[in-house]
Image 1 (spheres, one colour):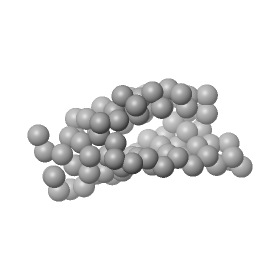
Image 2: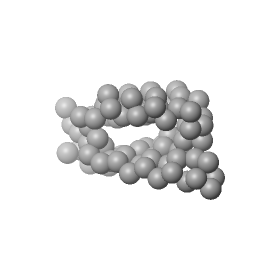
Image 3: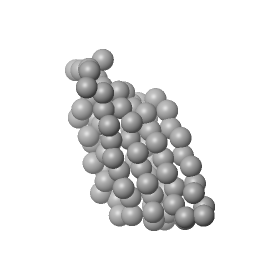
Image 4: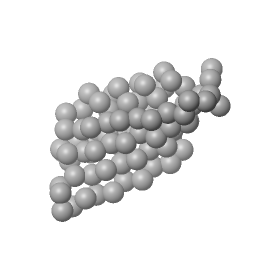
Length: 83
């Protein structure tokens, strides 16, 4: 299968779901290349960026599971070229 490289941006506005987010990211650890999380304490939110290398199905499953969590905003951008 063709793989694509991309970035997933997550804004966590309801911090009570952080453990659920981490559990899902752990499940998809095989496609995650890197992760940066920044707690923005002044605003009471957390922002996470994830670099991924996986198939469209794998990346879509990850973003889909994250998108179902209340209090999260999730967006992804993928390479146009397959690797």
